[in-house]
Image 1: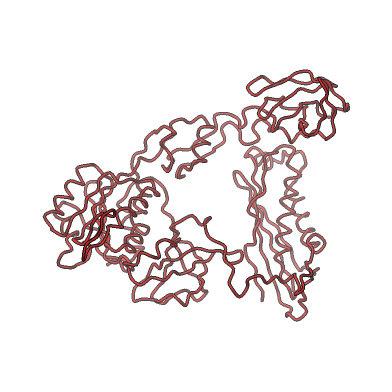
Image 2: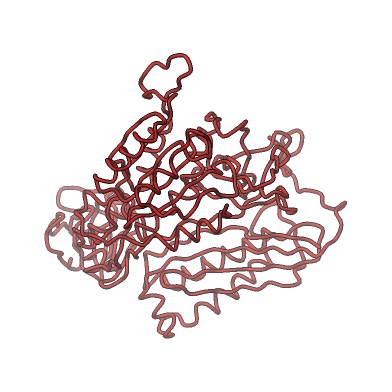
Length: 552
């Protein structure tokens, strides 16, 4: 019997990426990209108006202007002359330099003249290449293609990207007690819930069922069904049920008789302990225990990994999360992959164990968002454990513990805003670390590396601004305490498409310094934006967050 890691290693040693294929854009959703995609032109390809309005010369001194023409989308750009304005619309081409757009809401029009009542703004123009330049890498190999990726491929002029082939799966459900999910079960019978669930899981992971069968527990029928399934040319053969060592469990023997080499026969984990994995001439076979929860767990631990490897993508790894309500978790003699849901507690994601009775318990599957790894020793001493996510972490729900609901430290009993009294708290060495990102065009970051930005050493200036801001947080953020900071450090990491900012603040005080760290990152990012906006108007500040806080 193998551990889960040993089983992963076996699967990784056997499963190799399938040959990619070129597929029309309408059929690539969910496939894995197998090539680097570069922009075949600037994005946008030309400077264009971001709104309906009027194009005037930059620095135009007149407030009353005559309308000299109109440029509709798809027409060539025109340059206005002094004292004139050109009517433009969202998407209208405009000259690259020397012009500005005033919104139509900021003018009063009388016949063929307008009077400016608001200020023109060069920011109302989306400049050529502000999103990306010709030759920029816009998508990399290994990405699962989402609807947004499909749109980006179209914009980059890629009509038939090189992607992974669609993974074909033959599925065989076994068990004398099974009837179709749309049938009325008789005495001693149950509906087949595994087949629809597995079909949905496969579709969510870029695979599809190309052959399906359902039969009892006769070994001869199983041999014939395996032959029929293999004849349709699948990449994977999944057999549900019959994986244990009982008198009527024939999966392992039938696979051996069909020429499969059995590489895994049992894993030291639950649910799903009697897992079988084998291979024959490029066809992979899994024998999965028939209970619904075992089916679900084995799919995510093992079958999903094989699909990822076939598609040429990296299998997801467990992530370590804090565990809420860990007292509900029961350790066993072997490790358990405990169903859990995902939630936010404050600013941090947590795993919340779900109740389940046994591997046939299907009720917990509706809320499941991950599989919590529980070793024979239980949850880690730090109250955290590994979680294999079974859904996007972005869909986690926000939770507030009942004993914390509607308690706000800056609001008094009668609703008045107040400064929190921290006088009773001990003075301790407190540290907070915050991070953030400012996303830029690669050309902007190349100019930064070469020292070619017009405003000089922007990183040094941003570092000073962030340090000064941290020291003056109490002046910038209402109800923050003024603190004598011992240390403020700000670092930058320049990546291909962004600058990552990290700030650490240390202080001996009776309250935390997380606001000072967040302020340092925020002002450093704003300073970078201010100093580089002349060359890159498409920059965006993202992901400002508290990374860590501690006290000694």
